[in-house]
Length: 332
Image (cartoon, rainbow, N blue to C red; front, side, top):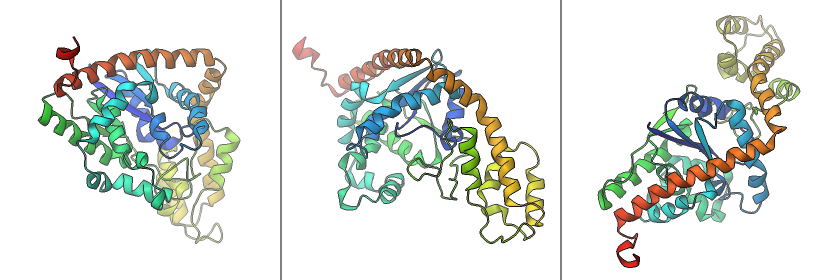
């Protein structure tokens, strides 16, 4: 079977942007590919190094989300990034294949640096994380990487690193292909370009019915409407955008009624909250059940670490042989 590597930073529980961006595809693809799902704790520390407890506390949170959403430990291997020594080794070797200027041109890196407002305090670890991310993927020699649309520049850099390594040292790494989720990037509740934990504009897979209702009622809609009978502008409304995902039938009618001033924002949001809750209820219920059996969840992680090391260590060994720095001829 061909191989998949995908994952998330454990800086908080997963939200519906993660689900539609790549998680639902991972659940489907785990039956067709040998799948590794990475909890990227080392990468998360690049901008959370002063609060490592935030990363630590979310290891189990993210694992619960994976399992509740349908990741099957019998089909997929969940691994913790910092427990894979091969990734750290490959990161160092790959740094020699990438220039500072090339990393600086990466649009995702530029956007995230601007978003986080680092300025002169930019940690080098954060700046260089595309190289670490390439090591994540190549340590498992993944053929396919399910990602959100914003991560495409990262995959392209990974392909460049694999290509350069193979050119210099000989065929070793697969050049992975990206797979963007069905809905691409899901906008935040505030109308922002990206749903994000750090921007506080997300609906989490673990949110209760009450939390979802509260968040939906506060979502950005149409600031030009003073009353229900005013003609609406659905194309700029987040409630209408989410109806496109969570309302299986009737979106055309919602649009028509909104444009004609026959549908109020409160009605629209209440319907959306009900549909969202109906969609998330099975995930939320399974998550609650798993949270009552953390021994099982920890067993899943320990098994994943063992299998992940076996795979990534073998890839690192092949890379060292290709570079002729395994030193077997010297050390025996």
